[in-house]
Length: 79
Image (cartoon, rainbow, N blue to C red; front, side, top):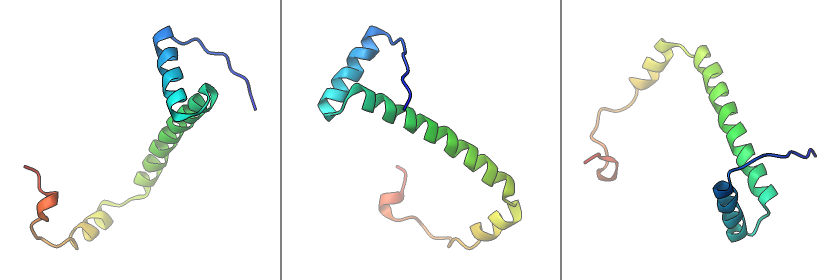
């Protein structure tokens, strides 16, 4: 495990402290989880870009053409 010192604005530190206390976790746990979420988001974007390069427009259109041409359910409609 590594130790990292960071500088935070007082207002952000205060908010992190409040949220951590409400969740019953330490500030370290909160920041570790927040960093993991951000890393995961970047990794997901990279993964999707790699997968997109493997895709073929023709395959996409073949699958899309199999979707039935029907009206959406009431709960799926945009008003």
